[in-house]
Amino acid sequence: MTTSTALLVADLTGVAVFAASGASAAVAKRLDLFGVAFVGFVAALGGGIFRDLVIDEVPPLAFADWRYAATAATTALAVFWLHPQLARLRTTVLVLDAAGLALFTVTGTLKALDARVPAVGACLIGMLTAIGGGLGRDLLTAEIPVVLRREIYALAALAGSVTVVLLYVTGQAEPAPLTVAAALVFGLRLIALRRRWSAPVATLRPPRTGRADPRTDRDW
Image 1: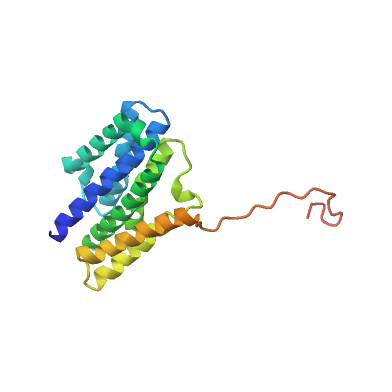
Image 2: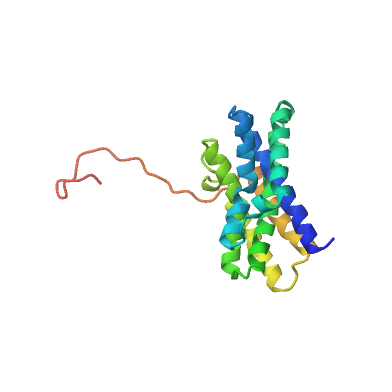
């Protein structure tokens, strides 16, 4: 299997798993058939559309290659009709989401590098490609985006994109090493979920009540 074929398969697999994740979230919010398909489409292709626009690849693959839209729509509709069976598979949805995060991190970073984007920019594009669809999914379903919560999500994608860049600049951008980068993102995300790892958050102190300091006329 050539590198281009492997990337296409990884890309379409990522589209399918993110479409399933988005459609599952839409079903849980009791959206209609069109709503489920639309949220699935955005979750699956939102990050890729952003990536292609940034690297000036127009029209984006989501619109230029029918296989992307067809994969997203078919998966979302399948989830709509099979949701009674999938409703009990919350863990499976989380695993699929982690797999999509890993696959899109790798493909997004590689496409940015192939477009001659500098290393730092390629890392950011790879991360945003991976989290863009989930960000759109959560906004459309009125949820605080996962990337803004305490969970390790965007950081896992960033670690994977840095790994891809290091492999690329050392001439090891072959399917086997890239699989290791994807496994890093996938494993880090699942371990973070399992162990409830989180990034630090600001601690807000409750306002203190009491008499104002007469010297400053304000509370301390």
